[in-house]
Length: 56
Image (cartoon, rainbow, N blue to C red; front, side, top):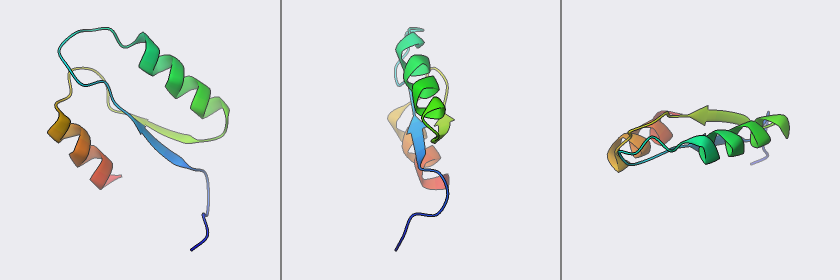
């Protein structure tokens, strides 16, 4: 099973605080390195993050 296309990465920020700068910096660095980044946004529950990862 070879990898075809760019590596896909899910970046998520669980929790209720709005401190997402680190997640955005990591997402941008991964994107700049040629990876496909799916950023789920703020205020995600662990269950929502898992659902997103399964869908992607």
